[in-house]
Image (cartoon, rainbow, N blue to C red; front, side):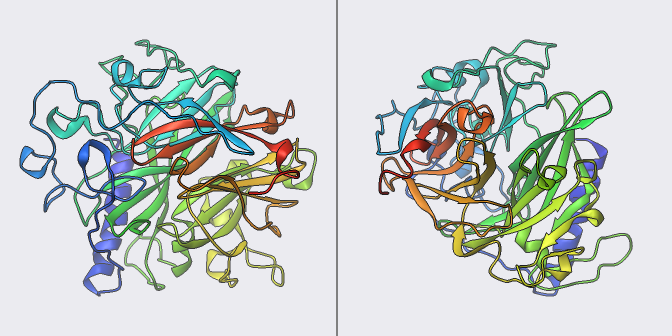
Length: 447
């Protein structure tokens, strides 16, 4: 575990414990979802902790410890065909064309946050990941990464093999080329730090190359479906195309429901930190003043908050002191997270779940996707809005999907066509599928 990551965890958790001793950290009760990876209980982007301490021993339902293959609950994908969108195929799991169970030790995972690494390759960060459900600890990794060079998504998203020593191959390589390695570690202890889950990612120039950045959340506890509590959000970076990651403790935003001064060199806790516990990065529209900035859309932990907005120059991503925050049309941009006064957020009165946002040359608008049962689309002329009302592009329950993450090489985002491709997760199979939406039909069909 990198020393800077260790320091960051200690700083954040020290703050969480200090807050907890004064009884001002929100906690969530343990809930049971209707389906889960490897039969574990959970509620969306991951699962609840195992046992009283979060360990995954055989006495806590983690499997028999047998090596008999058990890749989890995924089944063949029943095609979904809607008026705007249709499923293309599984991206992950034993039933995907990528056969990620045999090739990368991935039987179940979710999210698939996708971004261009600066050289035309697509990187994808996934949440809690399981391999053989009968193996010790169910081969649980808190997060993994896959790479793809596929620019023709019409027949699915293809991931090449992992090749030892090749940082551009299909996955992160350790001593097992056919086993995706964990990126950002976690304590893995229930009600302290259950897991660390990527929520946003972007590549930015640095020197003669590109540095990869992941914004992630440290999950303290899972609650009822759609509810969870985070310790903090933070940024990790990689200078070797996602092979290894270092968490920067100076980017940690400790989550607490009040303002709090902390001793020593700990960053003061601001109540507005809670507005940026889950995030999405977006580049501003090319050819406009907005192109000078990276925009960060944030939401509180869980799936029932509004979306908020920050911006920064690309070179300042790790310097939170140089961020600006949108505080509503009346006030505009402010220099401090403490000065966010618009409680409704940039997407007013509309709960927003895991989201992705991008400029679409095809629509000539910014596009936002989110959804926890079905997928919604919103548009705007500017990052700060006004954003349109949500338009359903994947109907609820057909299939039950969440966490839409747009593929950066979609024709609708590249200016080469009308099709928007995105990853979406299905909880019952606990895996990621590829969906295509025909944006030309937005004006001619009803949701």
